[in-house]
Length: 120
Image (tube, rainbow, N blue to C red; front, side, top):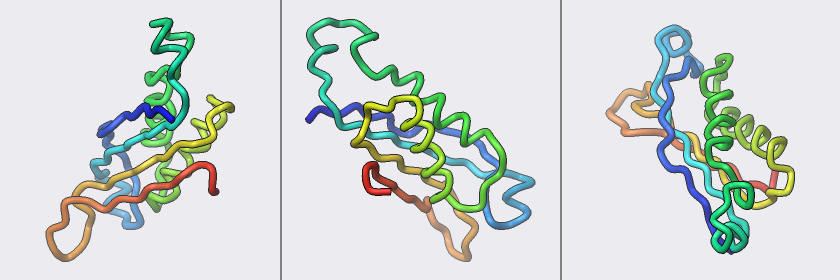
């Protein structure tokens, strides 16, 4: 099985449980990992034979810049559902959402959740 990975897509979103997060926003990163055969595109060198990662980015962007959500779990789920709708033949992928500098008492680089398809 081959992999296609988008790592560290950066967004400023108005997501979080607390009101100040919804008003001031937070910095987030999204990773998308696709497991599928990439052999056809490896031989053909043709974009139409592979997964256009610009479209994967668009799935993440629509969610991350969309309406406020409370949980990073929900953000990852929403992104995964958009990927599933746009690429119905994909059945083995992961979406990771990382909230940078989460609002907790001590310094924390990030909080992170990864959801996997299939499995939800």
